[in-house]
Length: 48
Image 1: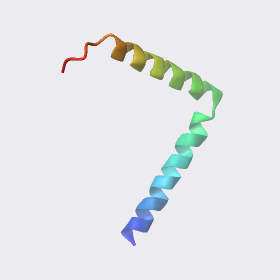
Image 2: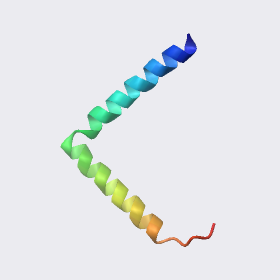
Image 3: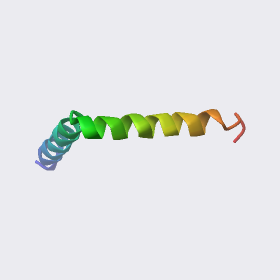
């Protein structure tokens, strides 16, 4: 029973995320965030 409720909750959240990602103003924010992330990753060396 708990697994079914969890799946419904996760699918509801995923639907909301997809719905928000389709909005043009959010697409610009997402593209900027990805570009910033890629830029920050490219500046680092391979050592940990």
